[in-house]
Structure formats: structure tokens, C-alpha cells
Length: 261
Length: 158
Image (cartoon, rainbow over all chains, first blue to last red):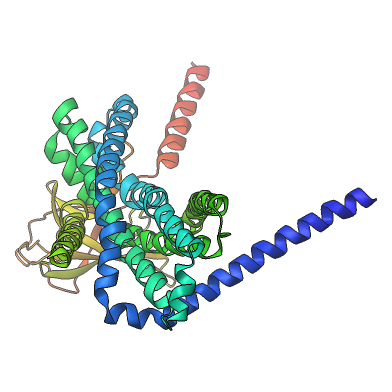
């Protein structure tokens, strides 16, 4: 009897703590919105963060996009070849990248590359009491630290996802047309006939904005609530990656079921 | 100096994003090929449109000359009303045939226009009278089965 009560108690506690986590995440978002006018007035702070989250992520994004595109081209070709429609490889690569892989893989890489950096940085600032020092000087840490990083993530993520899709398609083109020898014209014309700008490309961009929002907010929140110890910061960094990845995959399913019925 | 360099890098990044979006819109997607040209609209009635969809291709001799505008069901006459947008550069005679065909064995369905011999051309809002419905595979198969069953009966009589 006591055992069951214990289990129930643990269940209740975990549900309550995750709910309150969601609540304080929402509060953090509201606070960020209130203070974000400052981050646009002093846009150079945001630009610096775009440099760290966006520009420095370009290498990993471009390289992985090229390889993802090449693998899609190769695997797609083997299957489509059996049905004698290897020209459809362009459609396959483009739709897979624009709708799903572009936003999702970019978000996963973004969480690993930029999200962890944000969490670790803010966690360490908190540990070394830089945030408290700012408050002492009547500088809001939300306005000075959080809001620029939030907007940098929101701006960088769609750009990175679009670049990912473009480079991935070029990777597919490289394998399918230049290496295997699928007809060049058919590759592009089938792609253009079947990829719709409003339904596919814009929806993919909307997805990437939502993922950017989720990843950045989770990273900021985990950094701010991290216990001010070395272990706490490392735990928070791990949590950022795990929670961001899971929520990106979950959100992707929800968005897909809304968009591409 | 440091800040200027940073700005340049971020500028390059954002420009790359815009180029990528433009590239996707024009090269990968169909934003440019989609009705930038002027079109005129004609109507056609079909008993069965099969898998024809709005924005499907309208072809003449295999060349894309337009797009399907909208497909609606007429609840009084019980047939499908298909609005067809044809490129203004192409004029078709009034007795043009509109047939729904399938690209390849399992491909998408499209509308094929076969020009007739009339002197008067189709104008905007006109009706294409001669239409041929989409082939429904099940109907074809059941017809075939029915026919072959009939053949067996004949043999039994002999």
C-alpha cells in the first residue's frame, strides 16, 4: 500500500514539476518579449549573437546537408530504379529536404551546436554571479543577455534551414546527375512540377521558425535555472539537447499533421 | 574594426539565406512557372474527373499550355465543372476536345487538349463541349472480366 502511494507521489511530483517548468518557460518568454525592444534598439548585441549561433553554425550545416542530400540521392535512386522512374529522384530529394529533413535536422544540429553553447554560457554566468552583478547595476539580464540570444536564434534558424535544404538538393544533384547520370532536365523539371512554393517551401520555413523558437527558449531556460555548480551546468547542457531534440521531433509530427494532410 | 567585421559576416549569412530562399522559390519550386503569364479561363463538364486536381497541367500535344483552375461539383446537373486556365498566347478552336489522361501507367492525371477544325476560337468563359472522362481502372477491369466470362459461355455452347 505504502509502495503504491510512493509511486503515485513520485508521479504527481514529476507532473507538477514539468508543468511548473512549462509555466516558468512561458513566463521567461513573456519577459523576453517585454524587454526585446531594447535588444532591437541596441541591435549590435543581437548581431553578435547571430554571428555565434548562425554564422559559426554554417560549416556543420553545409557539410551535413551535402551528405544528407547525397545519401538521399543514392538510396532514392536504388529504390526508384526498380520501378523505372529514376527521374523522380529530384522530387524525392527536394520534397524530403524541404518538408522534413531540412527543418528537423537543422534544428537537431542547432540544438547541439548553438543551444548547448547558450545554456553553458548563461549557466556559467549565473554560477560566477555575473547575472546578479548586472542586476546590482540596474541592468536587466533579460534585456542584456536573454533577449538578444532569443532573437538571434529566431533569425538564424530559418536561414540555416533554408541553406540546409538548398545545399542538400545540390548534394542530391551531385550524386544523381553528375555521378549516376540521371537526366539533368528531368531532375529539375519533375522537381519544379511537384514542389509547390506555398505548400511545401513556405510550410518548411514555418516549421523551422517554430523549431528555432523551441530550441532557443529551452536553451535559455535551462541556462537560467541551472544549479550554480559545475555539475549543475553540465546537467543543464545535457538537458537542453535532450529536451530540444524531443520537442523538435514531437512538434514536427504535430506541424506535419496540420500542414500536409 | 571588430564590430564592422562581425557585421560583414552576419550580412553574408543573411544574404546567403535570402539567396537560398530565392533559389528554392525559382529553381526548386514552381513560383515562376505558376501563372506569371496571362491566361484566359474556359469551362468543361466531366462525368468523372478521376484523380484530376486543381493546378494539374493542361497539355496540347504534350506541351504544357495551362493549368486547371478549380474543380467543382454541380449539384443540379450532377457532373464536375472544371475551370481551365489557358495561356493567352495559345488559341484553340471552339470544337477542341478535352480529355483526361494519365501520365505514364501510375502517374498524375492531366488534361489534354486536342484541337478541332472550327474557324472560331475559344474565348474566355466559353464551354468546351467535347470531353472525355478519366479512365477508371476498376471499370476497365470489370468490363474485361465480364467480356472474358461471356467468351467462356460461348465456348460452353459449342
